[in-house]
Length: 109
Image (cartoon, rainbow, N blue to C red; front, side, top):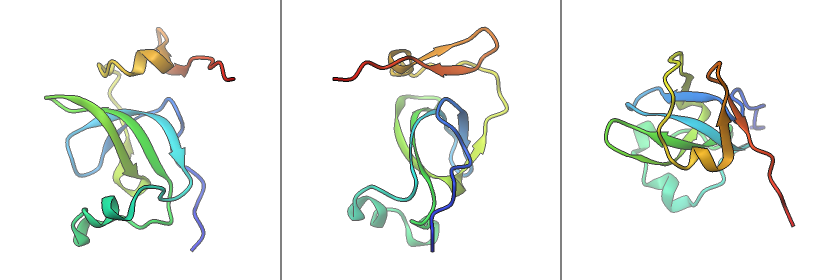
């Protein structure tokens, strides 16, 4: 099966469909691009398809902040306008007064 176009965009706030966390997308893989060990560690009944976009998130839940790698099928837009607290966001994004996150210009060598 061919990977589809990404439904979500870099800088978009999303929440997980099954687990209680939300995050800011900072990168997108057109299809699964992690280790087989990582994929197999997901219980088979909850294991996502590999032929879909996977998103890198600056994620957070009630207890902590972290980086998550989540399949498109498990993400929903986050309707909340609450700011995210993950400290890694400030390195790559600015939050505008209207609540939208914009990627900072990056310098590359």
